[in-house]
Amino acid sequence: MLAPRAVNDNSSGPAVQSLMRVRGRQLQDSPAAPGTASDSFMRRVYLDHSATTPIDARVLEAMLPYLTENFGNASSVHMFGQEARAAVDKARRQVAALVGASSNEIVFTSGGTEANNLAVEGACEALRAHGRHIIISAIEHPSVRSVAEKLEASGYELTSLPVSDDGLVRVNDLRAALRPDTVLVSVMLANNEIGTIQPIREIGEFLRDESARGRRHLLFHTDAVQAAGRVAIDVNELGCDLLALSAHKIYAPKGVGALFIRRGVRISAQQVGGHQERERRAGTESVANIAGFGAAAELAGTEADQRNQHVRELRDRFEQLVSETISDVVYNGNRERRLPHISNISFRFIEGEGLLIHLDMNGIAVSTGSACSSGTLEPSPVILALGRGDELARGSIRFSFGKDNTREDVTYVVDRLQSSVAALRALSPLTRERVSLAPQPAPSG
Ligand code: PLP
Image (cartoon, rainbow, N blue to C red; front, side, top):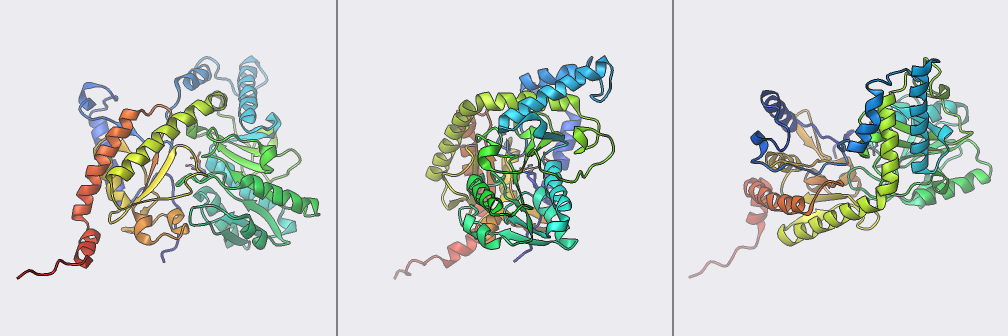
């Protein structure tokens, strides 16, 4: 089996890279905005909201003053600085409210990656004297997995919890893996490829019982980057000590995120310098981005039910139409315990990357967890972790819906998907093998 390789939300194999170069040149040559004459002949449908979301107009409005007249540094004592400080404080309250935390438990970072890195490395460094064993799940995002592997290379022991064939961690596996020297458990709240929602509350309860029994040096981190704004989060109900967030998944700008650090929990700062963020993360705050994150967090809280109902309806209709019109598909991930906007499907006999390119040619943006390395397509480690074979792991595509998608988008995508799958299957050696293995009719005469 190929060693699982870090996969990002935007796969970037050679085929995809060359497509991106072509697209980049096309955009440089004619940077037409969507809806203008030069692109009006092609419908564009964005179904990659788990990779990133567009900035909501109300979020942009909240940011603009801090990109223009209120440009102060939030650490400055003068009036300009105080205006910026007030914006950061407001956003801290808004982000805290989204996850049921107190505002002084929120540390702003440059995004979800930094928040996860800070949680894992910062916790392990702070608890170094108490143990060197870390537990993560087999389907963590690379921003957790890679830092855990880095610690492993420096002498820590790492246990990766398996998941069930529908993508869920089992608390009993965690119970069996826990050791006296375990200092950190990190299990994501919802998976970025298949959307499965993990039993974080049960894990939190179990770990709280452990600490009530005297285990004082064990922290619980959860990566809530995909879940935030889509499932209700209350850090006290979940029982986590650390929780990572990212703004650009909830219609806010890229390059800003946050780490919830429970009051009383000590972790070692990884970025040092100034005294910002109460010495937990040095660096001048990105005020406009933070203001946007705050506004988006508030909107995500108030509009969650409406957004979820909308994307769930689209996603379910999409899956129903796919099932009715395309054969040999396999749905990945638990059908109930999953985020409402994600559909992950493996299309037998074809490679996901080829399908992604085909769909892009039709103006449709989706993503694949497979990745190319040294010219070979590597299957998605998340799909492999479900126990699916290489073929299904290579043939998987993630469709992730957003609040601005429509029913017409769904109809268009299913139509193009059907023709793309048929075209690729007609060329696929895997289909030909299947046909040649199929029972042959008895020769007549
Ligand atoms: N964690 C998960 C589950 C993600 O999906 C992502 C991004 O796709 C990240 C972390 C990293 O967040 P960011 O892009 O803000 O660095």
